Length: 313
Image (cartoon, rainbow, N blue to C red; front, side, top):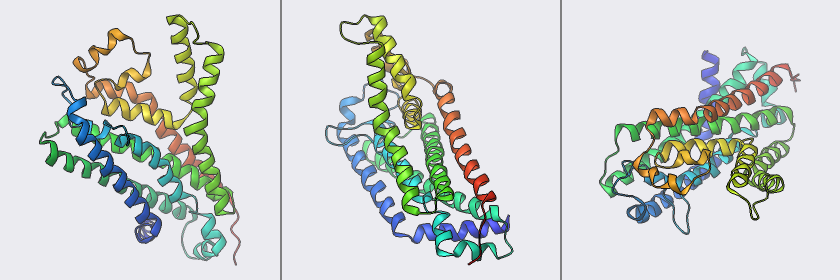
């Protein structure tokens, strides 16, 4: 355990002193504060007198030019996870540091465990800090304190973001273990992220329109088209994450992402918001899959690393 903490502290120090950490932190803060400014400018237009979750609008309200904070964070979290993991092992192997480290009285698994824990901790600090900064700015600007339920929703939001980032970090560490070149590992991880983020929606829409065309379609066919497209989109961790945070932070309507919205339902969105327990029940399947994917990716990288041969230089 002591050796794991030693590697953890060393990697944490490297992350905090690296230029990539400062650049990512600056980008996240700029995007978060910009989205908060847009939310404060439009929050009075989108909030209703019946809305009991006005404070959460800080995270979910966007504008014509800039999207909401949850849209920004959905885009940046995979990038942060990939950047903190793509060179975790292969850069150490290429430089010869890994073989020198293994010559010390230290267990092999402490290296990858310490690196992963340091990356997750750094990711957690980035996400939690911007989430709480937005809460502080909103508290002084709109003058509406968050309720205990809203505070819990924000904590669950940070928790889910960390596991989602942990999935991408575990995936990039896996490529770092398997591939010798750092360029190959980061390009492979980014290619997978681009496919899930941009190409899968196009493919899902094309398949759904091919199976259930929308031209002159009845309501039943429209629902079938929607169901096919959503089923295909849920292959992507990005879709699962988006659904999860939308249901948590938009209790007055986020749960309607999981089914077609009828005009008769729209009037009930604000009048009948989901409670925190109901929201967690709705997102439980997506949350379990995200956590499982993070664990599986790291477990695979752990097993492959433990079986690899490390030659002395």
